[in-house]
Image 1: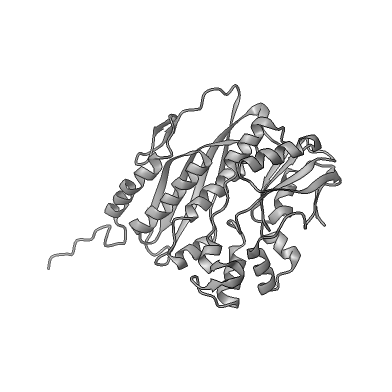
Image 2 (image 1 turned 135 degrees about the horizontal axis):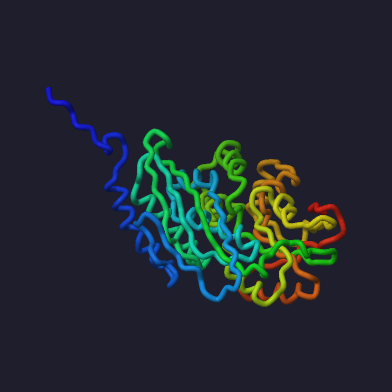
Length: 344
């Protein structure tokens, strides 16, 4: 009896689908290219020229994922927003030292490749790169049968940026009297979703397409609101105002992230009532009976990015950021202390 021929596709890996995906996403990626891109999607490596005009350039890299927010996207079958989250989590991080994002790469892993789903994800990544002003020059699609449950995928992102060495923002000059400005978040961003999913889908028993009166939206619409990308606003600010320190408010909230840029000898005192809490956070706290301290440790609470400036530059900083479309609040000040964040 003739032996059956076994192929890679029989084992669950569809090479042709992968090739189709590459062709599908090329137009999205090419829209993000600038004159420094030498080679992009489809090759073994992607080349990017160092931009001209830097005397002592420092390359800054970052990597991150989207976390279990992906599960909400998969439940709702909405895949074109989490790519924005992926870019945001990476570029907002390197922005805190003053780095301009240059190029971005993504890693998409799944058990069985759906070209339509993957294309939607990459479309979102490309949109995030356009918002951030960086080029999507490459990535990897991994189809791994039996590794992921059907319909699930994971994402990771990688960004490289550049900043002039003398302009590298370290936080070392932060001193008593400095002003802490908070830039509004668009929502939950990409942290705390294990708690969010437990509350919405287990405790409250909601479905992704249920309408929630308090949020004036369906569940998936509120939970999949993309992370705000602050790059262009903050880079404009850095051109005109001396900034002493910055923090991207992600997992750990304001206390867990702002503390990372404080030098010894100072505390940041944050006034909790100095900005409006978004409805989504009020809903989570009330419906889940979540202690306020836990809320601030888990979520951004409406502040997605923090900038610290001297008092004489605070008004100009607020004006510039507002002109760039940001909602800006004076949320605290720097005092003598021991490198802590104090909520009051």
